[in-house]
Image (cartoon, rainbow, N blue to C red; front, side, top):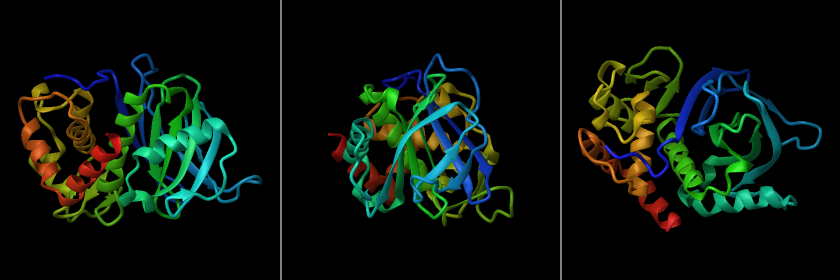
Length: 261
């Protein structure tokens, strides 16, 4: 098995119930980052300076640089800060038009332990918030991989195809909750993670992190499929074939390949 172009990239996903919404945190960690979970997060809506901005509180030490509220796929107003503008330009070049209505906010952060690269979670009013660490914008490979990975979560963990928590499940239960019947995540989990248990054969995965959970296996496999990571062996081909067979993920992959050049 060959690893991704950044073999040390890891993702962490945790879920917390806040007063306004379930929060899904998915992040990318550097190899020298502390081995701590992202942990629980909460959302507070608005503040004195930006009432439309959703403020996210993390267990980790995260400094908020600034936010871009996105309306109809574009910033709500001018972006005066050069660093935030540069971050938006990067996201704007990659985030596909087909999912622009899902992007509600870009938050630019700095994570003090120099471990976190990016996170995505549902916005309280629907759609998703993407946060990126300003310090990583110079690593184009890492940022591209991160955004592609997170976009697969936007699609496969969306309302209507996935329900978080431990309630009744009429589809396929995974670590985070319930994948709706006939959804791509339900089919993927039932095929490759029966009973929420995956293969213990490393050659069945595109990298080590994909072995952590069904939804992360799907997202890492999707990223490998989009970016053309040189992986082979085990179940990888079958996994990619299943994702290519999903009309939504196949179309998203095609659109991303176009935007990524």
